[in-house]
Every structure is written in C-alpha cells, then in structure tokens.
Length: 356
Ligand code: SF4
Ligand code: SF4
Image 1: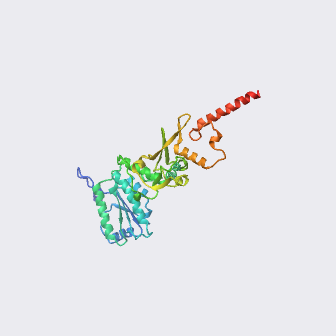
Image 2: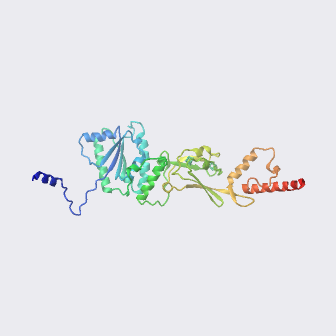
Image 3: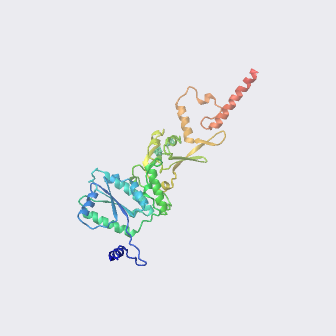
C-alpha cells in the first residue's frame, strides 16, 4: 500500500479548532472607486506591493456621480459589513462636479442611516491616482473600524437577486422600501419628527408648501397630483391639507395648476413621516356651514372667492335681482337642488291644474 495517499489525505485535513475559539471576524466590505482617480490610486497601491487587508471588494465606476444611493442601501441590506466610496479630490473630477453631487447625496443618506445605527459603516473619501499610499492606509483603517464595530447588525439579509426596480416601483419608492426594511431590521423606533435642513436635502426630495393665507382649498392640486401624494382630511368644521412625501416625485404639477399661486415645491425631508408613509400635515382651512341644513360642505375661503369673482364679473343682473330661493355661496348643492325642485313644483302645480 502506497503511503502517498495517506500522507496527502492527512495534508488535506483541516486542523480541528481549539475548543471555545472562534474564527476571527473578517468583514465583507464593498468599495466603489471612480475610474479616473481612486481606482488608479488603488491600482498603484497594488502594483507597488503595499500590504492591505483582503476585505475590500472594489467596484469600478466611471465617476462617483454614477453611484446611485440604491447601490449603497442594497449592499447594506444584502449583508455588507461596510461600504466605502472613493472619488477624486474636489476640483479634480473628470466630469467637473460628479464627486460633489455624489458626496452631497452620500451625506444625506449617511444622516438617515446614522439614525438607524448604520452611519459608521459607510464612508466617503477622496483619493487621487497618485495616492497609492493614502489608499492603502484608508483601506486598513476602514477595515479596522468595521472589525471594531463587528458583523453587520442587519439580520435576515436579502438575496441580491431581489433588488431590481420594476414597473411597480419608482426609484424613490424602492429607496423608501429599503429604508423601511433597514429601520425595521435595526429595531429603529422613531419617536419624534426629524426635519432635514433644505441645504442637506438632495435632488428629488421635497414636497409642496402651501401658503395658508393664499390657499382657498380649491382641490386643484389634489386632483392633478399623479402620485396621489396630496392628502385631504375633513375634521368637523375644518379641512386639513398634507402631503405624503415618500410618494411626492417633485414633478411640480400642483405648483403649476394652483390658481392662487399658493403652492411652491420646496426641498425638504422629514424622516418619521417618510418611514411611516404618513402625510405631513400643513394647515387647516375653515369650512362653510350650509345656511339650510347646517352641514359643512366647502372650504369657506373657496366660497368667499367664488362670491368675489362673480361680483367682479359685473353681470347684467345681480344675484339679488334674480331672487334665487337660496343663498348661492352659503348653501350646499343638495339644499340648492331641493330648493329649486320646490320652486318648480310651486310653479308647475297651478299650471297643471289650469291645464286639466
Ligand atoms: S390648488 Fe392652490 S388654492 Fe387650490 S387647494 Fe391647492 S394650494 Fe390651495
Ligand atoms: S410635486 Fe407632483 S407628485 Fe408632488 S405633490 Fe405635487 S403634483 Fe404630487
């Protein structure tokens, strides 16, 4: 019997782990590097034979401006222990401002993720093509930082095949979905609203702001919104206006259609209502009480505005001269119909009698 086989079998055997000893944690980190600076810097570090931990998987993108926030969120949701983004120094971007836009977007999402306890697991750095040494030291420091933080606390990670934007999702809708999922997995319980400063907010995030002194409650914005993002709620004698800003795509259709120029789309973000997908209520408008039945039927400023507009039309006959059987601006449509039906009946009844 040859001894080679038994020798090689023994060589192939893995050494049994010492009891109670755990494998050291080796984080899985994703690094997005821009083609023109950081990727070349990382390459330089490699070709210069600098030693670096093997935990980073580098993905080359043409510019950091190409990095969709979804890439970072999906990586975290898929179980990455950390995500690093590296681009050119400010002023050196091959596409002039790609890295500046990218950093602003990055900081916006980092602030959100920091609320869930994931902010330290992502970072944005600047490395030029000549800075191989800098890349090597950033690489080591980031791996050390993530090792100290330990494995990702995101549990029940998702399969990476499940991350596409399909017909049922807008990009913002998908981002909303992942942020809700991450916040749930992290056990994040928002207690109070968290408003971002407009300067912190990135393109695509905002909502309509109405001027309560100008808004007459005409519904035009509500009717035109293609995303059903504007919400109206009637509470007794008031009508409340608000926006679901997780759904608002800042298309500005509501701004264009408002007859009072009462609405502007402003950059803004509030985390609590975004995660809960609840309307961000703005203000209440008083309702007009029907002079006949006492029901509230239309916003009062809307009725007042109608009266003002009709009086400005200078019609041949004033409404008083028409001797209508109801007060036109303070009577609900049901009562108007009833009153008109009464008049018709009163006129028709004697006429019918005469015809007999
Ligand atoms: S369209 Fe303008 S006036 Fe009409 S409800 Fe909207 S904000 Fe108010
Ligand atoms: S900006 Fe567009 S999506 Fe947003 S509330 Fe106005 S109409 Fe709706």
